[in-house]
Image (tube, rainbow, N blue to C red):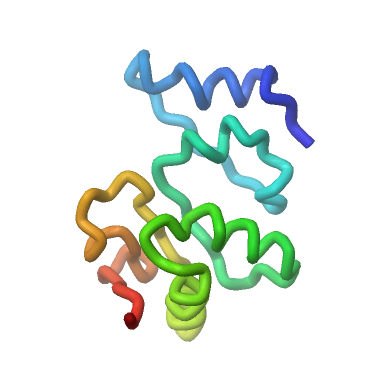
Length: 111
């Protein structure tokens, strides 16, 4: 587990003040320090997550406007495309533009 005081956490907190961007790739989402996860502005999620707890953690983290079940439905949709992924813009003010299927089209969960 990463500490809230390591270099990556420091960059996650401060890089935006200097006009920087930070990309973090991980196979274990829950291993990222909480301070990193709460400062995320976007997330790419590949549906190949076989670990049920990791999948649940990611769905809960990005489910602000929608339920984890609705996001799971979108994740199932993007998995039909070879190499498909779900992109979530966590700072989107327009709910219709929050999720994208492989950056090709916007997705909106069914109500």
